[in-house]
Every structure is written in C-alpha cells, then in structure tokens.
Length: 337
Image 1 (cartoon, rainbow, N blue to C red):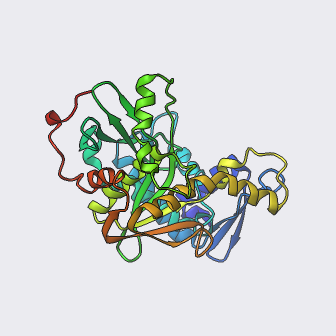
Image 2 (cartoon, rainbow, N blue to C red):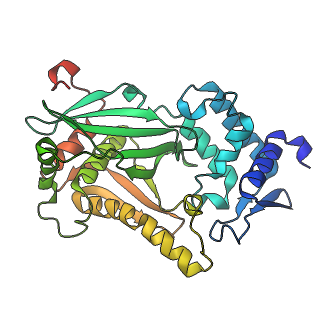
C-alpha cells in the first residue's frame, strides 16, 4: 500500500522508530498506537486518508526547502526523514485526532510572513516618558513548537529588559480567516537583581492596580501579551487559539499509569499559562474567550472584536503600541540602546 506514498512511508517508519509507535492500517487511513507501558498518556495519532497525508507531507517538505529560516535548514545532519519525524513532537491533544490537518497547519506556519518586518529589531514607541518597547521576530530551531517566536524588550537610557518569549504560529482556517495559535509565553533570561532591574520590575507594577483576580500572573507577562494582541488586531487577525497541553513534552514522567495522574500533570502544566489569558480578559474590552479547553477541542478559543480597548490606564500604552505597530516611529526618535 505505502509503495505509492513515499513520504507517508518514510514518515511512518520514522514515527515507529522514534517512539516505538505501532502502525495499524484502517480503510484509507492508519492509526499510530504508542506503547502504553512507556507513554501512558500519549494519544493515538489518527490518519484518516494516507493519500491526502502524502499530499500534505509533500507540501510540508516543499515549504521547508523554499525557506531559509533556522527551523527549516536541511543539511547533512538533518535530512528529509528527520523533518518528517519531528512532526509528531509538538502535537496537542486535538492534533492527534486529525494528523493531516496538523501537517497542513504547520506548513502554513512556515510560510506565513506576518511580522516579517520585525526580522530586524524595531522600536514601536514609548509606554512612558522614559521607557520604549522594541520587537523582533526570531526563527526557531527545528523541533520547537513553531518556526517563529516574537521577543519584546522594554528599554530606557540605562538598560534593555527582555520580556517573555511568545511562541506562535499563524494559519488560515476553513473560513479563510487567519488564526494565531499561541503555544508558549516563556521567560528565558534571568537577571541578577540590582537597582536597575528592581526599577524596571517596578515599572510594571501599576498594571496590578485594582486587580483582585489572577495576581499570581506577573504584570510583565500581561504587558508582553497585550502588545502581541494589539499587533495581531492591527493586522486583522481576530482569532486566537491557546494550546493547552502537548503530551510528548511530558513523556519523561515515569510511573504515570492512571487517567487521574495524567489529568493532574496536564492541569499543573497548563493552569498558570491559561490563567494569563483569563487575567487579560479582565483587562481588555473586546477580548472574548469563546471556548475553554475541552469545550469543543483542546484549545482555549479567543475572538477579538473590531473595537479593542484597555480598562487599565497603565496597560493601555502597551495595547496602543501593538495596535499602531504598522506605523512605526522613526528609530532615531526613540531612546537608544
């Protein structure tokens, strides 16, 4: 059967070799079954049509070969078989249910040029009389959740402060609407505490004014995500999906043999991340959470209205910079590094 479908055959061989998945053919499709002793909570990968999968995999490899970002650098060490194999690394629970759709979506992630103007770092403008915001889009390394990530800095005359990294992908749904899927909001750089760092940390504190719920979420994360939401809105991207859990990240946990243990890991892995968006929902008018994970699928779904406003005077400058990001202030007018 698979001789007619070389990419699908190579993919199944890689998936079987990497994780020891068993392949069972069913009608036009196939099911990849994980060894439960080793990976209790890794779902089955459902392929509904091998012929369709072949087409999607060809498009995926073509996208890789037509771009030069880090994620898609095919070389002697990382060949086509490798790039087919890593497709299973970052599946959410919903993605396991329709693998062909996931391959198509990830191909769109690679080819999407939204925010390409930020491939070189640019300043957006000021959020106060002394502090400015700058943005850069980075290409990720192979195996990351997405081909691109957005990094935002807050800077003044004395220092540049790195905000959490946003890993995202943008694709077009069946209705022709662009959707931003957010996989991770993650702080990487750890600063040593000194007077400058303390002052920069304090500069975010006004965002907490009057906030009673979700105060465990750092205001710097709220500021960072608000800039990004404004940037999406300015480009007409009104649909956001927040990925709740990626099972293969947590397969290193040992001794997970019950659904209760699995659910407990999922809760602790995603709870604080999802609470970020619950908090933003309290800050912004026109930011509507339309579904929670497991309501319709494994994502939190968010819809931005045509009019988006901040209820917080302290957060509003961050939103406004994001929403005006297509009309950048000249670099020379901003605070220099």
